[in-house]
Length: 482
Ligand code: SF4
Ligand code: SF4
Image (tube, rainbow, N blue to C red; front, top):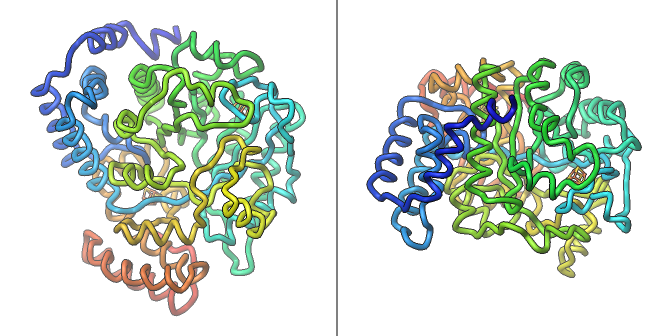
């Protein structure tokens, strides 16, 4: 049932035929034009590249694009990048939404061969944060200027779901001395039952529930998840159906690139999204495409079975924790970015001093889930983004005004989103500049706001934007949005 629901016989044929076909230049050009035209008139949903780009294309057409040979057809790759950039800018403008991951526990009984928190990694120090420790980490994140967090944990009886719910409540209650708080909590937690989904919903602070299938290829999935409850492929792939049943229609999918053939897994993830759209009226809100990162004592992370090179990775566009790659990916269509991330529970509240030493001596944080290669502070990331013409955004407007799931989809499809993202990005950036930015970042930021407010599409929106901006600057009001 699940196989037919998600993959369907027609898709299997498409995959086989595109494997065999050589790149047909004219066909690819026609598909790219179609994608571009679709973006002019129809605004698709999704905070990241994948779901935006495929809008209006069939699975076979998407397969053909993935099948472009990067070495043989650099001109087609260029065309592909240009189209992706056009579509991204058409939909979200220059805004890049910022968030920080918050790990609450790294106890785990699963044996994922690519992860530093795996139960096979006996030497890995384990931490379970209680609610007050989570709150301390959340406070440290808020004090950097973040407004969104992604809360994550491993799967273990030592860290029951109750503890995670308590951690969410504690995070939600955190305020720094300026009164700022986390305004949106996304979660990436192990598979849940419908009743636990309902409990997440009842916290009233839940944003997106994300869960990566890692690989949709069943034999690969079985190989790399050798033990623990995560090895249950069917329970995992139906998690988002239970999320919708439990009342959370804002979900995120993901593939861990490097485990299996990237084309196969990308198409399977798209089919998963199509299944959700068909059955629940809304596809995934986010599509995440991480690539396997080195992790201490995680064998697969050092000998990656299906390595994805940079050119291939640019094709599927990913959020990679590498500054050089990030810059290129931002041009193509990544519209969310984590900054100043820590993957070891409690690391944010350990303080800046320790982090600086680690960076200077060039060590990596190999006790975390993965090594991180971008050690810049949030202030530096924000400044660099602005220098490149992007607008760092701390917006949570849609979630706070109930524009989620199908409502968001209808709203976004009408093309109205641009009139919200741009002013909201600028208002939240203004808050950040006043409350948290260094003088150098402030200078660049105010110049950018002055320039970009001219690009707010409607005149009436521009007027009310100016009023809100004054309230932030002069009266010290916070949390204003459209
Ligand atoms: Fe546990 Fe998640 Fe790591 Fe797997 S990927 S070992 S489930 S923390
Ligand atoms: Fe995201 Fe804000 Fe744009 Fe809504 S308005 S899509 S929350 S950036």
